[in-house]
Each structure stands twice: as structure tokens, then as C-alpha cells.
Image (tube, rainbow, N blue to C red; front, side, top):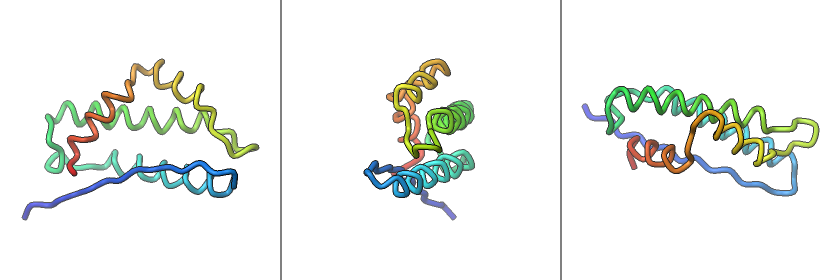
Length: 102
């Protein structure tokens, strides 16, 4: 039986630091869930899926590095710098994630 999967990832930043922390935790969980997607639910090649999983792991690590737990903030410059160092383009990542389905 065919299985449909849909993944929605979002994050909201508010002045409430607890809200930020909760949003980041949800995002990390979503990234981990995406890394366990099955090949049958992916519209690209197996190699593209493996590359995407590797990139998602890098995104998760970049987020961890950019997060300051003392202030409950994310340094977006640090986040983007880590992505660039890892060779990850946000545009390409978005295109690859679109292959996961609607």
C-alpha cells in the first residue's frame, strides 16, 4: 500500500525565550524525523536521499552551534556561516526537501 508523508517545518521567534526554546526543540525533532525518511517516500534517487539526510544532519549541527542556551537565542550569522562551511545552500536544501512530497 502506498504511503503518503507530509512534513511541515516551521519556527517562530518571539521575545518569550521559553517559546524560542520550544520552537527550536520542535525544529530539531523535525530534522531528526526527516533523516529517517524511507526511500519509497522520496521522489529522487537513493543517492540524493542520502545526500539530503547528510545535509539535514549538518543543519541540525549548525543550529546547535548557533544556539546560545544562556540567552535562549540563535545567532543567525553563525548558523548561515556553518551552513556555508558545510557547503549547504538553503535553496538547494529547500528543493531537495520538496522531493519528500507535498
